[in-house]
Length: 223
Image (cartoon, rainbow, N blue to C red):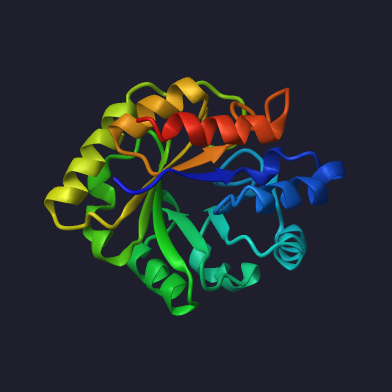
């Protein structure tokens, strides 16, 4: 496994404190800003359009972790100006030509990641392991914050890490997204996760956000 990395979900941030929140993330050296892009078709929600992404990018130097939960993402990649240091994840369920879309992400200078929903079997993405820098495993059904963990995904993460390592893709990172509580994060880390999307179950829960982040980093380093 690689090092533990936190990717705060910006759809969960208080819009009226967004600048203050991003400055805190920069102070604490948070590695990624997780950007949920939803089209109301692939998932039953609409979130973080192109203008919001543009403004966040102008305001912060933290790389983006752009999660495209949209139909036919290959036609819309340029809308979000992905570049060096950014991750861009596309769902295997949203395009007929996943390898082509992943190659296009890399051609734009970003790091491609394949994403799968809880019920999508891992063989759906095994043929594109050579084309990705990461795999995003949805640990809830995508669309809304605050859902409960789908328990069988923990075994899915274990199988994915084992398969990647056995096939020579040890460098491919595993990202987890959905109900990342501290308790669940420990289980996900032990299963093989590297990048943790943090939303209302972790750093945006009531209380002191800085303490939540520092506590997560401290506790996860013990595993």
